[in-house]
Length: 331
Image 1 (cartoon, one colour):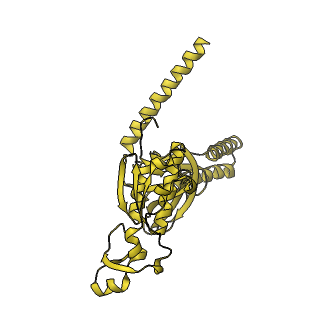
Image 2: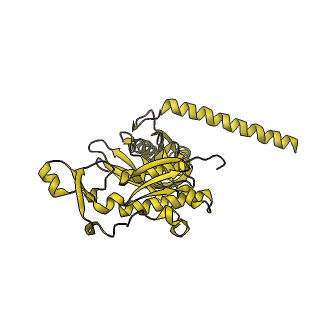
Image 3: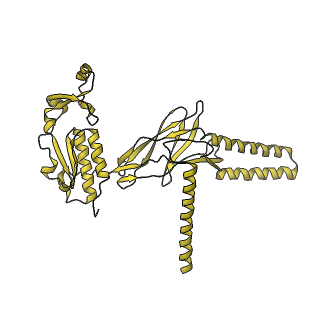
């Protein structure tokens, strides 16, 4: 029993050491970058199981041709060898020349599918097909092809925890066109995924003081009286833009509503004390989404960590980010 335990312990240490050495070598060979061009320095290629079987058949045919002095068998063996070498070259060319980049922030709610956009550019006149993306620790591959400059969308599940998550290197591979070779590359775009808490309906659990608007909510956009016009800001809802006035003034202006001036609320974490912490954060995420859809202004209070009252998509993103990164002693 003791010898088995020591053997397992040393094998685990050796595996960790090999993993560190490989990661160090890979960081030097394919360093992290926002744009990566695939060349012979960062493309790896080996025969597949079918490729090794093809070689075995080739050797059998060659041995038979030598043994029986059969010219047709020799011709077939050399034809198979030529096909094998062409397959290796074409599989390599199906990756070589691609330029990949990923610069858009990756954000979403815990447990949902998100769209990770990669810009994939191809050489002029080249067609790429049978390509697959996946993260090794989230092995759900998605195939695609490239026939001109464009963008491909790679969908993947967010891990079941909030906050920042580093998925690591992305694997891009292909076995096209014959399936005799597999070429791949490990791509590191240094990207991170920000997971927001999963929204949890909680309107019935929030006190009236903390959940309701201090003044009446707007029933509809057209039912309010416009009080004034002001210059457009990044956090403003585009639905409030006054296009006619913007055309006259030659700058973007937004409508400020009478009811909007008083329709503000504070969303407080303390108002959900009866729920577990994960459900409290999910409840606030639900209320933030609801307020943003209505166009209401709101502020966020996380046990004294406050986000000032504002409205618009920018305010929603700031509030959700506060929830995703919230840290409290004992939680």
